[in-house]
Amino acid sequence: MRALFIGRFQPLHWGHVKVIEWLLTHYDEVVIAIGSADKALTPENPFTPGERLEMFRRHFGANCRLLFCTVPDTNGPTSHWGAYMRHWCPQYHVAYSNNPWVAVALSFWGVEVRSHPHFGEYSATLVRRLIAAGDDKWRGMVPPAVAEYIDEIGGVERIKKLLVERNF
Image 1 (cartoon, rainbow, N blue to C red):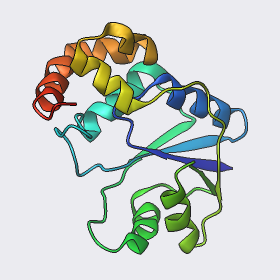
Image 2 (image 1 turned 60 degrees about the horizontal axis):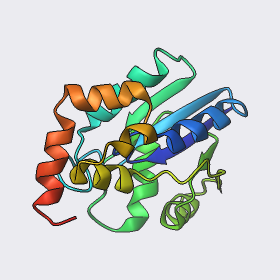
Image 3 (image 1 turned 180 degrees about the vertical axis):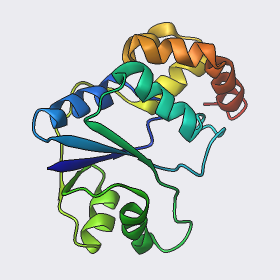
């Protein structure tokens, strides 16, 4: 059986990793849906879909039990979002999300949505804010390979420019 795990992964952090590891103990495969794929280089979405996919590859390697899809926002009626998930992603049997909007949008299309456990107090928003503030504590909130990749692509400078100018 396959489970679907949805997120923006801006960036991939230890909380995401722990949920995925937990899902892999319960399912044969996990489909990772990278949401807001049409958005990048903004304060809320500083990384491109390709960069987010690379973060996964750098941390998980060539794990053949993970499948990936990128899903754009509908920019229209929220009821369309569940149809987008069916269109843009490989087949899955159950979805996992703790986001009430995601649960309603997928349930509308007949998808079973379950909540997943929390593994620590991780937040991509906090990671971005720490980066913008020049606080290296963010490095402990993401896998080392992700931190190295963010450095490699100039992600720290990018986030500082995007967030500091908006007074985050």
